[in-house]
Length: 277
Image (cartoon, rainbow, N blue to C red; front, side, top):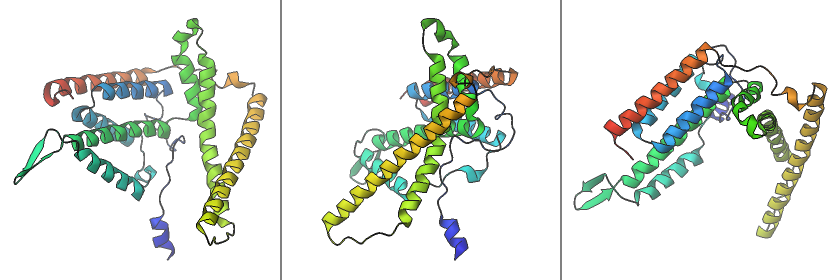
């Protein structure tokens, strides 16, 4: 009974926690990864065709192989997401458009469905890029990289350092708060519950549970913030978060060149072979 039950348990989404290991992808500068993700995101915004999507998907698979990302890292897809995608695709089909298929005397336009599938594929590859950055980058490396990338904006009095520190603190606190909320939710489910007899009683119990969970979550967040503030003060202040030396190396320039080449090839093939969308 134990093995089948454990096999059916969904694997949670693991983000903002690097996968243990050492690879050429892990050793890349965090700023390089951010630039690549931003550049590919801009390309897919203006050219969301199947050719660029396929090339980016191939880049994701190759990068995951080079980074030795295990298949077990991928989260389980909940059933409700498949249902939502099916409903979205069925709804988009009613938009019609080219291509059109003939079933006897009835014509069906699949243009809306194709557009929906294309946008879904774009979302998937962008999520894959973000996940790869999360799985191969230490959170402590993000703030110095953002500070270095934002250095040209300092003469304009843009608070780059404050932005970098805020981003670093948010990335550090997000996994902790997720774990805390999971513990709170599990503890809430273990509490004995009274079985409501009326619909009004069920609504009232649901409202009370929501208020209790939100209150407990706010309390936990404030406690974590106080502990994090004390730790930052003990280590020299918030300025130390983004003060670490952060520079690209030779491998980073190679990675940037490969990314630029891929984007150029994707745009050229989309304009010449795939056509514009």
